[in-house]
Image 1: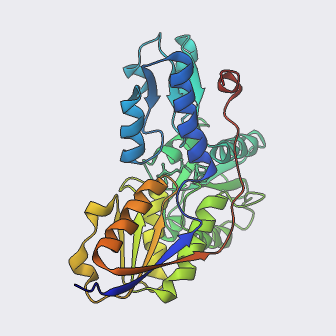
Image 2: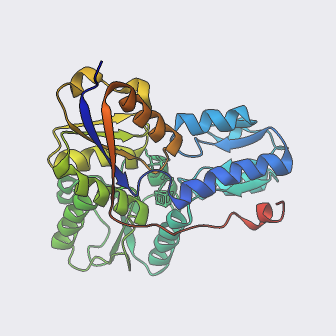
Length: 316
Ligand code: 0O3
Ligand code: SF4
């Protein structure tokens, strides 16, 4: 039986970013240093495959610090935590290791600096997302107001329109955020912005790669979890770039093959928390059904690396 021909356009960069790589390494090194169990507050990154793998090695995932015992190490997830969380761990004399991505911490510091200058913060982000909760939780209640959409800007109530700064979640859509920032600047001309984008290099590069493959493809598959904000944004970017069929899949088993019938070119990318092993699993599933040609579309090269905290560097 001859298989139908199909070209897979593989976006690059895709998959793990430097912050995710570091966060996973932190859990693995903590298990080596202190043995199991090591507690992790919230999914270290939003990927079931990663979480299941670390759980099998002895990590225990919880949502809140009060689910952890005092006498075992706890790790805070890559998305960041409100200030109250490390404070509570310290009060209980726990060993706590912060796996917050340094690029999220940079936003936390920006918020603190602007607040010290007397500015109220406007956070552009998604309500309830752990990164937004963590960033807003760097300052006392009321010091940070949230906007999710351009429409939210019109209804925003602030203390003093002349004393405002904005910050963003790191994983937002670059294009949607530009619209929200423009609306903020139109309504509050004095608003202060970040020196450089709060949307990180990894988010920006993954979205640019999707835009580059969109004209070549009939369908886009984004490998990532349903709770992964950056992965969901890649689906939206694909649709906005003209790809009518763009779907999030956790792994090969989630692919709707019927929806792909008659299609000759499929784009593949992966969110910042999705491991490459799942990309390979998806490619293999295509190879089993199609005479598959894989073409890499590389729009940037990434060399960013982050060191793990000193306490874990000493152990290796
Ligand atoms: O923030 P998001 O839901 O995209 O988180 P993921 O999927 O775990 O990806 C890593 C990104 C991150 C830790 C915050 O920037
Ligand atoms: Fe850090 Fe960006 Fe990765 Fe988030 S997506 S963990 S901010 S590098």
